[in-house]
Every structure is written in C-alpha cells, then in structure tokens.
Length: 429
Image 1: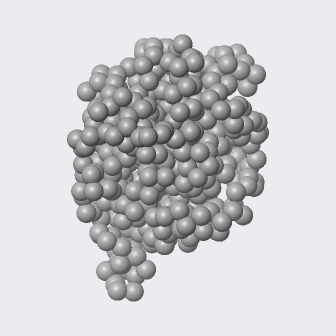
Image 2: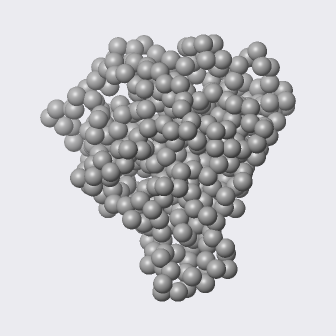
C-alpha cells in the first residue's frame, strides 16, 4: 500500500470533495467490466459509466447518492455528517488567527512532518522520495504547504481529513497549514479568501516560530479549494506578493458559469459523478452574486455580455471588502471579480508555476483546461494533467488505483522540482 486508505465508514453516503475521505477496494478490471455490462451492476445506471476506469466504478456508484442542489439539502447533509466534524487518529495542532478584514477568529490546523519508516495509519506517507531533501539545509526550516480544503464552499467535512494532510506533510517533509475558512452560509465571498490570506500572512510573518522556510511556499487546494487557491495566488500577487514556488490546483472550481444556462461549456458526458451540475450551480449562487461583485469591480458587463447593473445596496461583506482595500496602501488595483471567479481574472500574468489536474469525466475538465491555456498565454509555467477514466475526487474513491498513484507521483514530482528551483526561477539549475 502506497499510503493509508482513508476512512471507509463514509463511502456509501459521502461526497469525497467535502469529506474526510473514503476508500474502496480496487475492482478487478475483468470482473468490473463484466459487471458493468450486467443490469444488476450497482453502477450500471450512471450515465456514460463506460467512460469510467473499472477500478473506479464502485466509487462512482458510492458517490451517486448525494444531492447538494439547495440550501435545505446541504443543511440536511451537513447535519447528518456533523459527527464526523472532528479529528480522530491524527490530531493536528490548532491555533486561531484573526481575519484582517473583519476580525473573525479563524481556526487553523497545523501538520508537522513525521519521519515514517513505512506507511501506517498513524504515520501516512506516499512512496515518493523528494530530491530536494538531499539539498535542503535543515537550518532553513521546512517548506510551507498552504492548503485550501474542498467542499464547494458549502461543505466542510474535508477540513477534518487529517490522514490526507499528514500524508502530504510526511511525503514532502513540509509544514502543512489548513485554515478552517468560512462557508457560504456563514459568510459568502470574500470571507473564504480573506480568511485564507489572513492565515497565510500570519504564517509568513511567524515562519520562524513554526520552523518554516518562508522562501519555500506552496499553495494547494482541491475542488472549491483549488479555485480558492487560484484566487489566493492572484490576491497575493496584487498585495504582499509573498514568493510562491508553486500553486497546485486539483480539479479546481474556477468558473462561476459552469452548469448554468450561461456556461461556455455544454458537454453532456461530464459531471455525472461526485459533483454535478445542480450542485455547482447552487454552490456558486451561495458563494456570491456575480452581478454585484462585477459592479464592485467596476465592470460594465459580465463575461457572457450581459450588462452589469449596480445594486441599490451592496451586501455587508462586499462593502467591507471595498472599505478594507481603501484602507490599505499595498493593494494595487484589486480585481474583485477575478478573485471571485479566477477564470475571469483580467490579468493572469506573473503567477506561480501551476500544476493542474482533473479527470476527463469531471464537470470541471473544460474550465481547468481553459485556465491552463490562459496561464500559458499570460507567460506562466503550467503542467496540465488530464487523468483518463476518472471523475471528481477519484483518488479518494480508490487511493490504490493506478490513476490515483500516477496522479500523486506527478504532483509530488512537480512540487519537488519547484522546491529545488532557486527563488524566482522555475527550474533547478
């Protein structure tokens, strides 16, 4: 086993993008293919199931039972899963950090690297040996891997996926920091972004206290956390501009229009497993009002050409954001709409090298590809990994699957190369 399989108790009812993670035994290819052709196969009714790698079909079926298309359904799910909102075997250090905009106390989970002789439940590690460790000066401290958890801005259980975050920490020998940013029903945009940026500022300012090397910073996130990571990279560039070695955007949620009638993409074969069109449409609506954010940004029209109408009154959160920026001298020219939906950021230049990974059946496949293209066009370095035969959060469904192993190898190799590169450069000399 390459790294510990995550909790199996939630597999039948939990969306891995939002939860502490699930695993399922890898299905024998021949048996799974035969079963999928049978009317009795539990996953046979999933649209385009033939596109899914047989090793991941059991996971696809397990993730097909949730509905996140309304506030009521999301609230019911969160209530059902409340018992899982805790750390179990692995318990990170917890501190609180103040949001620089509104003073909210943000809980932050901190994972410190362990030395694992082999993978275990208490010391999870992936079988990748970072090359940069051979060159690292221990006196400089550990890299900082700053992670934004997933959940569509509406679900939080993945914040408690301590096994996953500890695996990242142990494999990279990095300090992993995961802020418990606010969800949409607690405070919509820009709260999650400013929560995370405030936490990032705190750790960069107190790097020595946590044995962190501030010159070895990586931003990472999955799903909504991937989109938030892209927003954080944009926001950081326009503000303190801390040196970031890389941004890892894992099946990122980038484009607020995807799934709606105004979506630039209309692929019938995507988004049938784990995270669906109705969930995405609701999640973006809950996260923020695109028209009002565009108006705050001074835009005259939305990306689809519809005119922007200035609201009679901005929300409390948007007024606080505008006032916050006006009171700071280091903000540059804020692009609020780009921070909200990174796909439509007006300036995508001078961003950290990006690793972007998405499954070819994921609802976010097209927007991830487009964002990679935009980053390249703006002069950035990008590694784009489109994983065949898998859906959203596939690696949680089957951590031992071949595609999961390939994904993690690619991810760690990319980050390893960036950590070895001199500050301000892309490649190791």
